[in-house]
Image (cartoon, rainbow, N blue to C red):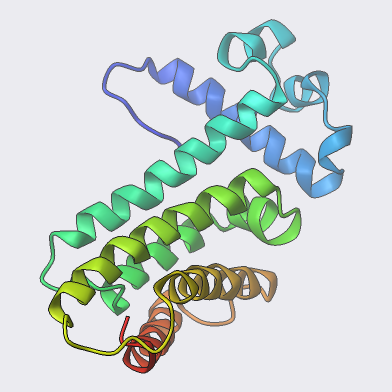
Length: 198
């Protein structure tokens, strides 16, 4: 997973990717607390000075990787929102889950196996924001309807259900295709929204 910028030197992007790949590889082998800048640099075949040219420390590396993850997921949602189906329907979900599948090593380590809070928290917040904005749009259309479940509970449920399902899918070595999983999730979200009127 690498954020591309027209002004960023390709060598800089390559070095950052080496550092991030080395970090992910190390996380598969040892706990986060045992990873040092020296170990990352050694695995990435760079020196410590090069690491510090890109990141202040390991916490900064984690924050920037989380920022990048949210940016990429947000870009998928933004691109999909211009399509006729603006709900969390299967076409949007397919793109999301395909992205996760393409970056499965990253997501398996940081989301499904190590559960590093910054990644889970950022992704949860992103989905809470997305579901909140979509809920408000639906509420305007359903102005006279009775809401059976408080909006905040429905939003917590929707975001947690999506992330929880993705985590289980990753932990089970992605037994379903992104298309099949997205279709099932879209149906579950529709059932949930019909029940709650959210």
